[in-house]
Length: 125
Image (cartoon, rainbow, N blue to C red; front, side):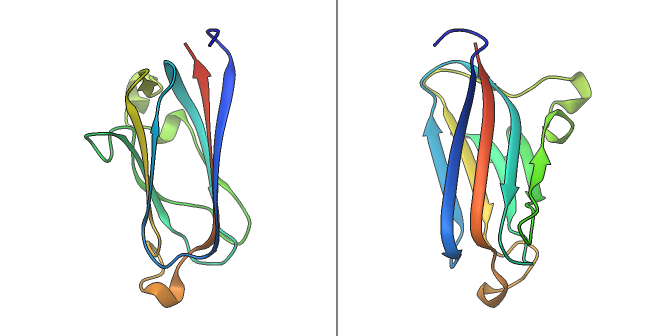
């Protein structure tokens, strides 16, 4: 993949979540993670953390996703290396791991996030 090319990955889970969600993407190319947008359709926020194959919060500690159809954007200021102004580096062959706590701010499955969408944007290279 040509260096500098913009790539997005999108995941959508319809319905009210009944359990935590684990998304694992094996990187097909080197990239930098520059932006993640997340939202659920109801008023109950799930919690998203971003890591790699070995460390759950390697790139971002758990944070609340958007609710009621209003997305929340995570970018450089939200990533663990924000102090050094360094975007997460994703290496070809390594794993990008997204972990979603389905009832992070709701407590219990009766107040679980629903219709969750996650969009991860990265730049190849």
